[in-house]
Image (cartoon, rainbow, N blue to C red):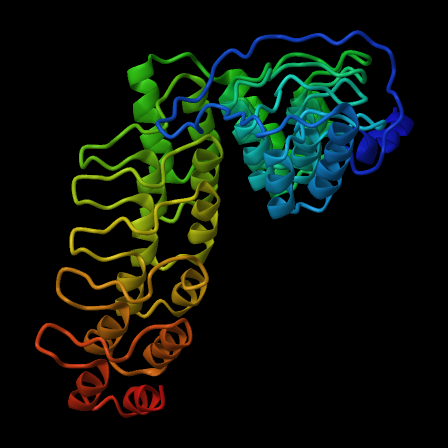
Length: 424
């Protein structure tokens, strides 16, 4: 068994060209459930090139696309696809651009291939799906995206393993593998199906390898009841409040809606963000929860990150491509409350996105004006002013009364802030 594990640790994921695996017949079982999301990725978009390439040109384009996929060169991949390269075409090691994205953890590349007709049922040389490859490497985000694409959760490869088995047997029990197992549990993976050769169930694999947290997830899943959908929604919200990602996964497995709302109209993700429940938020994002869902106060999960200032949560939400232009009830983007509250780390990170550093809210203030008017001139506000200026904030944009950030700083006795603004 050890020899088999060593053999496939890289090969069945596509890290290097893989030899043909054992000739065991593949078995597929339908997934028992699917998370319910409101922001499911759009249907695949397959564009036909203006002039269809001939066979020789097609082969060359396909070869170049596979090379671009290994390099995660999105610009090159888009160009090749537009010219007719096939995202499902495989080389002599049974690798395609789509399969490479799943093993290497290239989420944007995966989305690109899915948009252009990637076959989620495609198999590698071990007769493994993209989900199995992702689970092998602990790519929870890739696993979640594939779940949303209705990939077969319980497909068994030539080694006799499902995605769950690979996450346990080839994983190291670290956070990324725990997250991956939670995604699979939420998606309805079979928790009792043993690996086909040794007939060992997933829980026994986890305990024998000392993967204690994964074992806890599996044990909780095996002991879980089957609540009504309404009760599952309540359990999801309660799990978010406690920060219990495993309970959240089980609630989703039982049919809870990812966009379940509390009495204030806050979705499960918004509550997770507001309470800085990172593990729960990762699970919800991986499964497709909406980072732009508005509550009764016109807040979204993304907007709330500007209030809390959590850089870690910002990083969790960014892969979901939140709308950075959505405004809160004061007409501001997430950068403005972050600047007002002195969240230095958040401001430093968010200005590296496409957010508008000169956006003016309903009060007539930019982030720079808020940092001065509502700040205290201390070191953290000095840092924020500097960061904003370096990111392109315009110090000449005045408030509705025509008062500039420099004039506000001088009136408030913020000498260092004023000095920074004078030198801008």
